[in-house]
Length: 65
Ligand code: SF4
Image 1 (tube, rainbow, N blue to C red):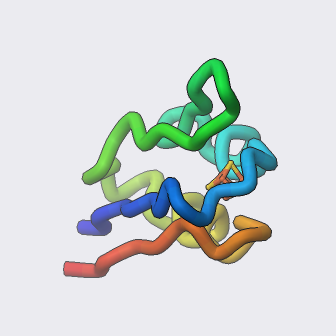
Image 2 (cartoon, protein in one colour; image 1 turned 135 degrees about the horizontal axis):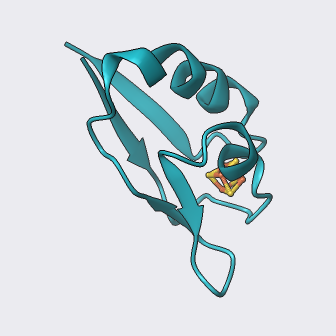
């Protein structure tokens, strides 16, 4: 099980996470990241990890249980 966190003080609105895993990430009207599923299904875990690595600002993190 992974738990997703997004630091809204750090997000630079690139939208990369939304492109990579739209099931888990969205952007508000102002561009700020929004986590749709804080505990995504196991089948999405690898893509979520890649989205964390691909976030240009380091705003995303995952906790692994
Ligand atoms: S990839 Fe990172 S910087 Fe870009 S919208 Fe998502 S959280 Fe924000």
